Image (cartoon, rainbow, N blue to C red; front, side, top):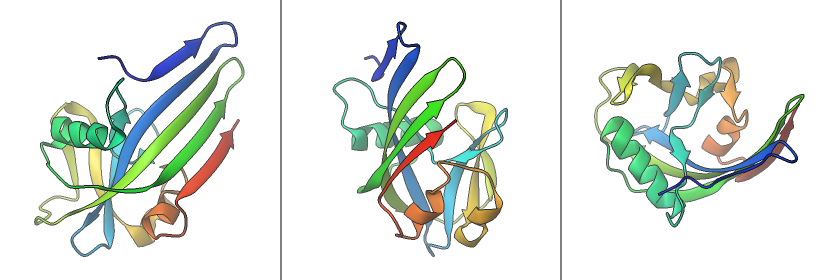
Length: 154
C-alpha cells in the first residue's frame, strides 16, 4: 500500500499526511521523542499514513515496527506545516494522538528496532523549551495548551 504523499512537479510541491503520538511516561512528566541522528531536531514518533489506512492504525503500526510496543491511543490534535524552501514547497498534515507507556523505563535514550540511524529519548516536559523540536509546539500539545497549529517555515 502506498503512502499518502502527492508530488506536483509543475509547482515543485508535495503533500504528506503523517500520524504521530505524544507518549507520556506513567508519571506524565516525560514524553518520548524521536531523534534522527543526521538531523538537529527531535520529533514525535510516527510515520506516513498509507492509502486506506486510518491515522490511528498508522501510529499503532509505526510503534509496533519501531519499538514493538502495543498501546491504545486517543486523538489529541493536528499540526499543519508549510515548509517553503528556495525551490520546494511541502505541506505536511500531522494527526497527533496520545498514550501512556505504563511500563518501567530502563533507559532514557535507546535505539529502535529499525537500526541505529535514530534514537528514542524520554525527555522531561519541563526541558522541552531547551531542545530543537519539530513541530516547535510539541510542548503546547503535551501540556494541553493547544490541539491545532499552523506553521509556515521558510
